[in-house]
Image (cartoon, rainbow, N blue to C red):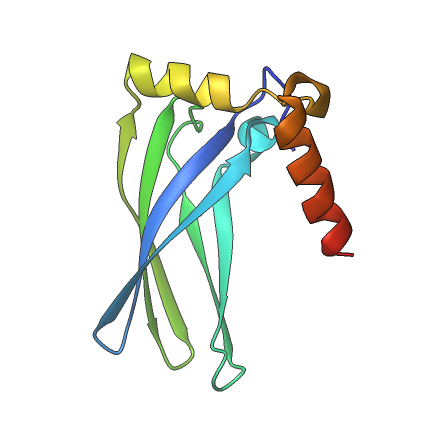
Length: 125
């Protein structure tokens, strides 16, 4: 969970395996930004249970106002990782991200939505 001043650094990626491409997204909490000069990724093939790992290194430090695009190539026991590109977010995207990262209090919602939320929480127990 992020605080009001904390962002998650987004990584948008593609996993290519047997000529099939799947999109995915992961994020890294801003609090780890100063400690991450590389990211270790692990893929588990659900059909075989085989695992493969790879590292993506970064020159310099990660930036909280940047989207990172990564690519994974998986075949058998091999997983290749690469940083495809990085792009600074627009001011509009940053403003939206900051607004969305603020926690919402249940008491701030209209009463009807509060009831729906509480009913849904009670039915999922």
